[in-house]
Amino acid sequence: MIPIKSFTHEMKRPMILGHRGSTKIKKYPENTLQAFIEAIELGADGIELDVRMTKDNQLVVFHDSDLSRLAGINTKLSKIYSMELQDITLLSQNEDRRTTIPLLKDVFESFGSQIFYNIEVKKYMGSYRYLIKELHQLLHMYRLKENVWISSFDPRFLWEYGRFEPEIMRGFLLDKWNLYTRYICRFDFVNIIHPCIDLWSFWDEMQQIKKSFCFWTVNDMLHQDFLKNRDILGIITDDIAKFRRSLFTE
Image 1: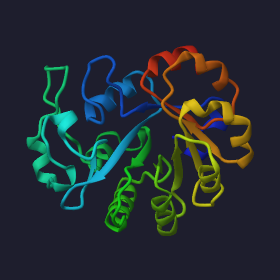
Image 2 (image 1 turned 30 degrees about the horizontal axis):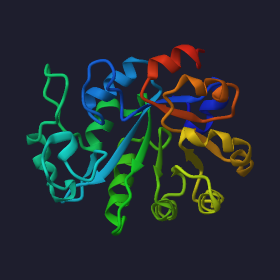
Image 3 (image 1 turned 45 degrees about the horizontal axis):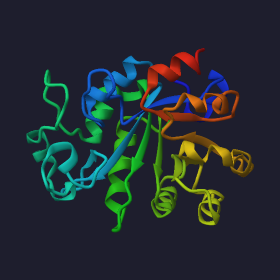
Image 4 (image 1 turned 90 degrees about the vertical axis):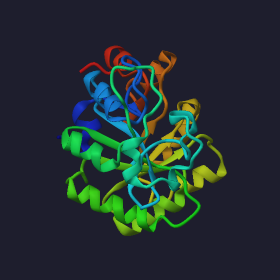
């Protein structure tokens, strides 16, 4: 597989990443193995997924801090042991198959190096020490250093991970373009700038920082003219097939 750093240059187009997989066709819950399979079947180059920690310091693929929206359980994910995850059934519009919350190692075990991964580490007020150690071990165990970049809204995490393992690319997520975000984007611990697509109008200013860009969450075809012929590493989208077909055909 082409390394992340070479993808745009060699493929002549941005990478297409399924936002938490794909939930459009079979209606499986987000961030599940089934959603990731659907994204790959629709032609995604990789997946964007969210990572948190369980009570026993295992990396779990889940967006929210609690289970209420996706499982109907009023409990914080940080209070759950990893062995309990298999007993939690996610709410789903697809009743053909029971869906559960995967650990990050389950995702790596399922897909290995055949795809790219953008791993968003959710913001956490405490120490990232255990999370960084566990993530480092998994990336080396499954030999995915060329397939992964890590992103976060928290520059503290990006800085800490960069000190621990500088060769893994790191992306700064932002939904505002202001003095603070411009300041953070210029640091060496930020390799990729991750703006929301609503910030596209600041492109001329953003690209002066001379870093890679990945826009989220790109669903409106009105943005296709902006995205064409731009030096952009990737887009994160909920509608993989539409953008693959109409914008980034090879």
